[in-house]
Image (cartoon, rainbow, N blue to C red; front, top):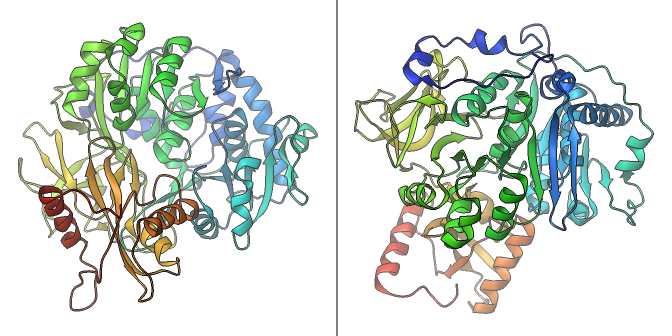
Length: 562
């Protein structure tokens, strides 16, 4: 496969692909063997070198651009791997990256895999609290970041060795490694470390409702599922110019803006800049993007900019994929009318990758408002509370049938129990209905996880950060419906006896959480209460707060302390 260009996969009927699906057929597309040994850097880079293609097209917010071939990325990754080994990183160890979307980020990821190590993403908007928990959970041996983010690590207890990616004119702080200086002295020769399919190559995190973020170990066995999604749902073709807007600090970006396209020998696009309608339309036009992926929040901002801004790229996008939250049918209509592009809804989780899709390549009925059909290799079911499969049009929990899902790779959270896996199913926590044709329609979350601008935010994280403030005795966090972001984080706060609730204090608490946790997970609204609603046993009742918020929205403007 590395010697000849990958041919485009012709459109096929979904039912035909489903009927003949075999995991072995996907595994045969890889150079390595999942049972005896393979290397993820080889699969995503080395085997595509002879084709002479581009691995990365990069553009910075200040207008700088660069392209890197697979051959150049192979050499870059080898230098990084040599650096890691020199720092004592061994196969199976974790290396964390907290970098913007730059060539150094991709080289770090590929180099980590080349050394047989495990890459852990740290979103650049994370604060010290979020970083510390993740590094402690993974026992990372090395963190690679830049000067803009270095200060956050100063407050991290038992922080591992730090390597700094500097820009011209900058220097690494005393005691840190200078990333560029280190790799400049390293060889471009590094024999890839072979690992088995059951070995890990990513360490992710996901937010929950009753505890700190949980580690999601991703084994190499997940690669066939990532490949299948890119081929069948995204319909990534050799002549496409692909851009996944999602940040590689999160699952959708790391799985499908980095791993997925490179597996297929296809260039990926990094834009190192803030998301705006102007920057997005501009890059689509300049780069000639034909295959776009992202979240509904981003697409709603494009729509808000109006048809005139969309007009210069109308007809350029061949397909658009959407993930992170349900796609509003209005977005589908607008994209068809003003961009001339079909936009399809896809569904997944950090724990699963994408599992339910309106596939661009596979022919099947697409129902507006539906997430689509199970990706071949997964069997999904709708369960009741007793793990019984429900018939069509009856709401229940979307679940994956473990015995009949050969592409399922998640087997449990890192070093902790996984109640979601029981009785032969993985329960996603999302309430859905299945239509008679097998398509899945989203109803809502069955737990308290908040979905805001495509991010899944665990209320426990925000509550824990608020309680650390000396003025706060208790806190409860809910998701409040919001037209632009789907939901925003709203906090109900009980103050210490000698503290007065003021607008100034509310703002102080917002900034406190924003600095400690992350720029996307802070409470945009805060309401002060005398006490929180709880069960007789002391368990917080967030559903009462959600009802209170709905009632307030009906009867009066939001409280002034927001």
